[in-house]
Image 1: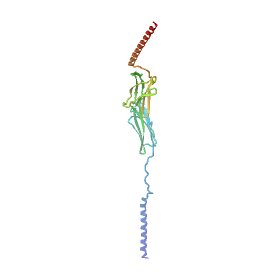
Image 2 (image 1 turned 30 degrees about the vertical axis):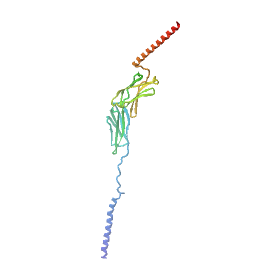
Image 3 (image 1 turned 90 degrees about the horizontal axis):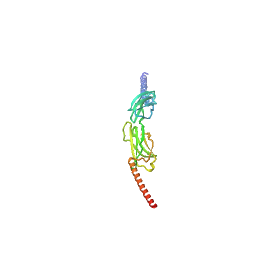
Image 4 (image 1 turned 90 degrees about the vertical axis):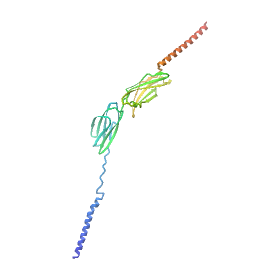
Length: 269
């Protein structure tokens, strides 16, 4: 019995050591298991839209315009408007902001609206077009000189002149058209177009008109003159030539008539 006790004690100590070692090793294995500690979810913002209204607007030079910037973000962090134009009043609501722009004079400019939602910024763009339709479009009476007609068309107080196209029409036929791209002035101006063309027999009695059109990136604004009938209008030189020709013709007719009467008188005698 005395020899078995130390041996039993050694077996108990060995068993206890093995169990404690296995228990201590389990936490280390559990920390390496991906099932107990999943990775943190990625932070992705919910999709949202941004709109600006109106998307396109045309105003007279020096006028003002309102833009409304709205979004589908329930709690927008920031809303801003980028423009080089002078600002006026501003009104806002839960998901919208209205901006007033004053003294618009640039013929074409972009306005950008930006909204930040959950750390993400999105935007929308609108365009302002500034123009002034011609105050009047008039034509002078056509003048015939040296077999050609001279037409003069006057366009007053139009802007921007660089986007103006003036067309002269005789009946349904366009006889001349000119684009005024070379003009870069940034204020309303007057324009006079002069064109000379030889008129044929088919042109007499036809209405002549002058059409002035502004082509502003798809927005077309036109004004037309009152029609003038193309007739035999004479210049001073043409009148003098016609008077001389008429006098010569009358002289020839008188000579012929005198010769005929003399011949008749001879026959009667």
